[in-house]
Every structure is written in C-alpha cells, then in structure tokens.
Length: 152
Image (tube, rainbow, N blue to C red; front, top):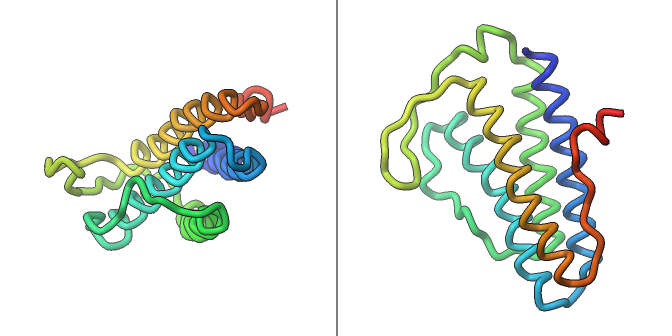
C-alpha cells in the first residue's frame, strides 16, 4: 500500500502542475477565473489536510482562496514538500493511524491516514474535472489527467 500511495502522489503532483500551467495559458477568458479558483481549491484542500495532520486544526484554511497563478504555484510547491516528508517516512503502521479532526461543517470525525491520503488524491481528480470544463469553455484544450495515460 505504501508504494501505491507514493505512486498516486507522484501522479497527483504531476497532474496538478499540468493543470496550473493550463490555467495560466487560458489567459483572460471569462471562464479562466473559475478554472483558477478550482485549481486554488485543489491546493487548499491539500493544505487543509496537512494542517489537520500537523496541527490538529484547519479552521484557518481558506478552502476557496482567490489567488494569482504564481501564488497557486507557490502553494502547490509548499504542500508538495510537506507531503513528500510524510510520503518518505510513512509505513503500514502510519497508514493505520487514525486522525481525529473537525470538519468544516463542525462535525467531529476520525479517519485512518490511509483514507485521508486517498481522499487527497481523489479530491484533486474531482476538481480537475471542473478545471477542464472551464478550460473547454475558454476554447482551450483539457488537460488529459487520466491515470492510465500517466501510468504508461
């Protein structure tokens, strides 16, 4: 499972970088702002979970930040570095650990680190779909972020 998660995050990081580049190339199209908003949310989601993991609280994380592309890139790199530390040190015992946290809706929750890390990858994939919808509305090509294509 550890090897698979590391591979999924390699895919995740590469696809996020591609999406950020595509959003940047979309320019000033009216739909580009929504694409940028979705891209920022992908990274904010990562930051949220990292804050929960590291500090036990993510209440201060803006889940829908209004950021410029360079700020999104900086957020992406910062969260990648934090995740690389987790990924390089994790083992099966770590993946079984359970994290208690409060959702943004105020609900007390508890999940395994495995489930949290899987959610991070899946959450990004979901929002990449929204980015692609906005890019297409701008007349720009969608980012092919299919795992099976990347895995080749």
